[in-house]
Length: 203
Image (cartoon, rainbow, N blue to C red; front, side):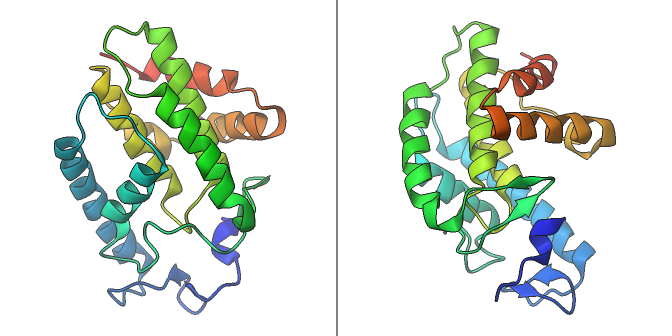
């Protein structure tokens, strides 16, 4: 992906991986370690966050650090380089802080998710939160996984099951997902993302 070709001091050009605290230079090994740490972050976050918690950008930064803090020095900090991927140029690094503050206000107004919300309201809020955070892409890496972690915590508040992450490794789903994100980026319409998520959100 384009974002991994970005010229910056955090990227190990020789091995094609992000420089990390563990000194890992093998892509598959690094991915395996990240998977393990993501599972740990899910477990800890599920224990820490209550069904009444109002989420803000500080929680997003905390979740990112909970996930990647033992692997990367920059975990929990906003990126300082511009990234692009799948025909999308994410938020310029210089504007991330102000965009995240705006997003934080929206997020706090949409949380907590209530168990008595109609499913349509749950999916609508989730599509907005997920899509907006992906477009801002505040971190150097781990944005998608951190976003899914946040969304799963919100679904737990509403007494829904987490989204099946296996879908994000299905080629056809990924094609539709990227298309939905591109539409949101170009038109601010989250309807395709809503339609993609609706059948995946279950009690």
